[in-house]
Image (tube, rainbow, N blue to C red):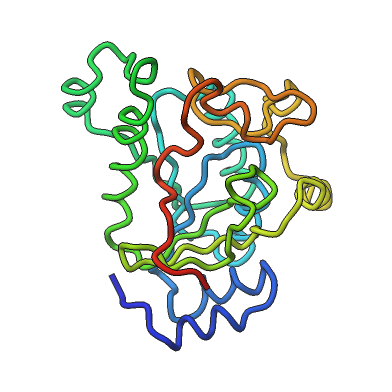
Amino acid sequence: MPAITAEILSALRASPGSRALMRTALTGELRGSVALVSSFGAESAVLLAMAAEIDPAVPVLFLETGQHFPETLAYRDQLVAHLGLTDVRALAPTPKALHDRDPENMLWAFDPDACCALRKVEPLDEAMIPFSAWISGRKRSQAATRTALPTLEEISDGRLKLNPLADWSPRDIDAEMTRRALPRHPLVAAGYRSIGCLPCTRPVAEGEDPRAGRWANMNKTECGIHRPPASVS
């Protein structure tokens, strides 16, 4: 994993706007050591389109939990073909890990944190070993818990996390999807504004946070892959 130098940080901080930040990350000194992590969810298409425009060979990491909506898997394949992405990697727990820790495929029902650790956190941690930075599609508008989201985070494992769309509103996303004629996730029309695993996702009502349908009625708001930053830039 290449080290994050002061020069790299300076170049990223000096890149105004989402597209400039993405271009610096994907074509500058970090080239080849940056991954984009995508759920192929309700708003994923914009970030993926921006990345594909700069470098269609950027590694795109998709957490294949085995619990996705069929519509999400079909949408992933549609977007990959539409955008010409050439390095989409499906990350999944090993069959042994699933057998040992969730043999009945019901872990989500009684310990959702353990389920997310098994299906998301651990596979991503392993896949990120060669990378110095990763790009996330999180936005401040998505939930009350994300209102202070920075554009650039230095996280505890020494890596950088870039949130190029941090200040984008739902209206911004919708306008960009329309401008680019991007395909829409089919579940959005059914009221799903944030789409995770099928057992833990419901449509949201008018006026609710977009992520209110994730782990509804549970004391849980994040899957665990987004941890508090060690420092914020």
